[in-house]
View 1 (tube, helix red, strand yellow):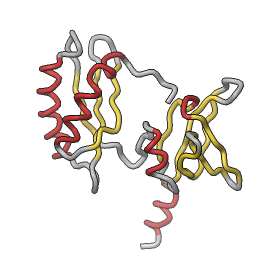
View 2 (tube, one colour):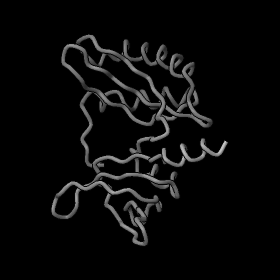
View 3 (cartoon, helix red, strand yellow):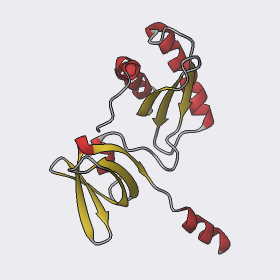
View 4 (cartoon, one colour):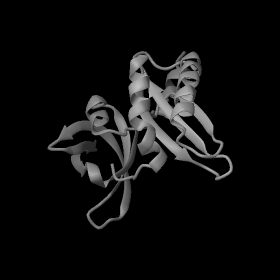
Amino acid sequence: MRRKKHPVVEAIEPQVETMAGDYGYELVNITYGGPKRNPVLTIMIDKAGGVTADDCAEMSRRLGLLMDVLDPIPTSYQLAISSPGIERPLVKLADFERFSGREAAVRFYDESDHAKTVAGTLGGVKDGQVALVVGAEELLIAEDRIDSAHLTFDWDKLDADAGEE
């Protein structure tokens, strides 16, 4: 992925990933930012069957203790633990393979370094590139050109399905 990680994220990611794994969770993503006076460290976790509010509360306590030990941020900050939600971010190359066949939106930089966002069906990973099927065309996107990506959810289909009941 093209987006550079914040130094705080780089410093804690290995320990957070290990702790999450020890308790049966997958580390999806870590972000750090916001206002200087009140920054937020957000840790997104997942597990088979999904993440509940109780899961987030449990991992908030555990990861809060880990952050106290690591002390990666010299000022006060908020710690937020969340699930990836239905429009889960795709962060690692393995995510694109894992969710092959699902609908996604990918923001990337083309050969002219212009940003584009394209939605389509994930076709996995081919020769180290993300395959995205858009209409009848397969688009191959180099991992280092991807800025961000996430699964998409068809809200209109949900509304249509709800109307059938």
